[in-house]
Amino acid sequence: MNSPIYQTVIVGGGFTGLFTALYLAHEHYPRSVILIDKNERFCFKPLLYEYFSGDLDAFQVVPRFSELLKGSGVIFVKDTVQSIDLHQQEVKLASGTSYNYSNLVLALGSVTGYHHVEGARENALPFWTQEDAIALDNHLRDCLQRAVQTQDSEQRRKLLTVAVVGGGASGVEMAATLADFLPHWYGALGGNSQEIRIVVLNHGKEILNGDINEQLREIAEGELKKRTVLIEMVMGAEVTAVRTSEVEYKRDNRVETLPTYTTIWTAGTSTHPLIQDLPIPQEHRDRHGRLLVTPTMQLLDFPEVFVGGDCASVQNSSLPPTAQVAYQQGATIARNLKALALGEDLKPVKVNIRGTLLKLGLNDAAANLFNVFEVVGKPAHLIRQGTYLTLLPTPIHDFQATSEWLDEEIFHRHLDPQDVGKKVIQAVEVVGAGVVGVLVARKLINMLGSEDKHQKA
Image 1 (cartoon, rainbow, N blue to C red):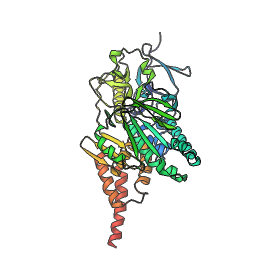
Image 2: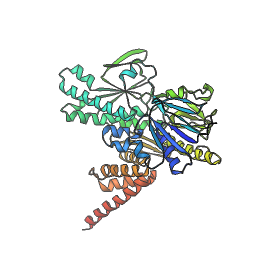
Image 3: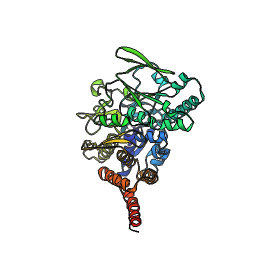
Image 4: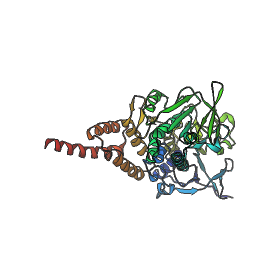
């Protein structure tokens, strides 16, 4: 007779998976925990733009799982999941290894959705992982280098035109970031920065339509106009093909093309293939194919399986697929796993939406805080950075990352201390970011106190 298996397997090391593992370790969970992910690094996706633009380092945005889980007791396995057998309670890996479980956490997230557009998967550049950021960086630098060397004006125009497909939050953030730093890159090579062209191709009639950031649309439209180069917005553009040197799209029943060597794909996501392959009937999925779960984050037909993040759709709820939702779901899953192990009652998930944060350039952002008021520009940028940095996966990691960012961002940019002091203190009071608050307050007091002494002298 086989002995029962008492271990929890977490598939996927995104926000839900990693935070579930960390919470279990913090709560002294009595069973062994195995976290499986195909990558060796966790990717803090909201800050991937900062890694891409060079504002933050790899250890801040894409730290290794081995470092984050050190001393936690969680076993990290770098491997690709090949199949999940819910009936046999077994996870099989590409290496041939398999793990049985008493409880399973599905936290696979979503994948880039190309929506069957011809050539999109082969020719468009996604922006989802560290590898994507590195590939895009290398591609853009190569285009700029070739542009500054060519005498062919048509060729140079293609090299300097960037098409961003999708006018949701990711597309807006990408376009704004590129419009700020690409001109600097090209100018440093001796090129004319005004030749840089950023074009957003959006299927809808408005940007941020149906997005959690929708209430920031008017602010975003205004801020996008202030970027270093003009961002062209093409609304009602249904992309029909992506080729190596052009994007084809349909607008007003006419087929048009945009000559470009760079197409960045931000037009939505799709359900992870492993989630699609699970033997879960359609009536227990939402219209996007995500798995319906109870308020306690369990599968309807397999209560030993917990699901969170982009994989899950909580019954009678309409939570957005964002980082702040995913990590709070991870906390609930961890608490319920411990309750299950101890024979205690499980509790429903409660998610606190703190607001929305939208990056609108290198040092610009918009923030809607608790749906009460909005902040724009540099103060919003500081709020966004400070908020995300204090959400990094472990206290040691977020303290180190936050300290380095604050030192560079606030105190080494030759800004007016009085102005920065008021803005950052307001931001800290609003967000309640503990680590940021302590560091900022201490440094500002020293700066402002020193300035008062000089003035009195």
